[in-house]
Image 1 (tube, protein in one colour):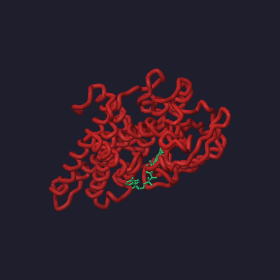
Image 2 (cartoon, protein in one colour):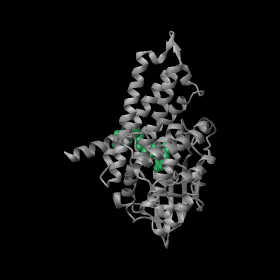
Image 3 (cartoon, protein in one colour):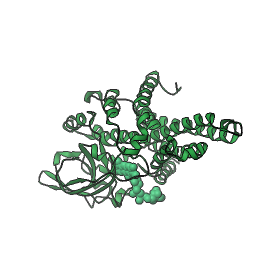
Image 4 (cartoon, helix red, strand yellow):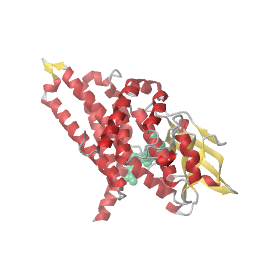
Length: 382
Ligand SMILES: Cc1cc2nc3c(=O)[nH]c(=O)nc-3n(C[C@H](O)[C@H](O)[C@H](O)COP(=O)(O)OP(=O)(O)OC[C@H]3O[C@@H](n4cnc5c(N)ncnc54)[C@H](O)[C@@H]3O)c2cc1C
């Protein structure tokens, strides 16, 4: 048991780990090869609360604290990066804004369908020409026409659309209002004029669908506005702060998974008459990985704890995400090194983990953007 966890959190961790070992780990290579998630397992996640991590109990959710939610994502990431990314995006990006800013009617309509074990949620911020700089670059517009919004534009690199009954879409609603010119709008995926393109062919996380969306005069009722008109940019920043804790947790999970493979292999593989684990050069890699994973996990838990205390956790979330993603990169790299040629082969999971972790320094704000957020906060504090 980790000393930072309560008994309840430790128990939850064990339940999720057992589930992941049985239902996800043996199938992770297949998910990667086929590009299809294991829905048999996802359906079972419903009863464990993994599909409604921070949804209030009043809406049938697990209503977990943020450390527990991070534990869940870490455990998923430890065995299957694709599933972890889709479940993380579902909870944090798809459900998160609806739970936080949805009206009673919106919650009553969308939360049950998103948590039924047959669907996943999605949030569409990024566009073909704008990721880091949404403020200046986002061009998808929503214009009022009578009692409807008419949406036009394109979104790119969106996780989960093919499983989503509804997508939260970041739209420009006033071209002259700067950061107050954006709103979040709920778009049902059967809306006329919405095209969901086939999944992108990616380096890793192949089981998690990443898709482009095209909106051509898509009409949705005025009541699909999520929160206040003009608050979309602020909502996005809040959602990303929280999402960064989750990507940090997913990175820790990928690092932990690779670490376990690395240690096991080092003890089994012989060179020069003894297990390679006896060699100091190998031990240094193991020692560094053990230390860095602990450091990353501690930052993730701290950011999660600060969030639950109602503190400003933006800087800590960026630190957690930046540190954990860089740790995942290094640990997965070293795990392959310790495996030698076998690490370069698809026969061993470290090859997949290395490809999967590569997104972590890019998605939900690149490492460069995390450093900007951290520096901005530090400079303000002094
Ligand atoms: C698998 C996957 C899943 C994704 N899921 C989603 C999703 O569900 N929803 C969603 O909306 N998006 C999603 N994305 C998109 C992702 O969040 C963006 O790709 C990311 O924010 C970076 O944006 P960009 O690719 O446009 O890069 P750009 O913003 O074009 O950046 C390119 C490079 O320039 C650097 N850069 C940019 N600005 C600065 C600056 N001011 N200072 C220094 N360097 C800078 C960046 O760090 C980067 O290295 C996903 C992407 C992938 C690959």
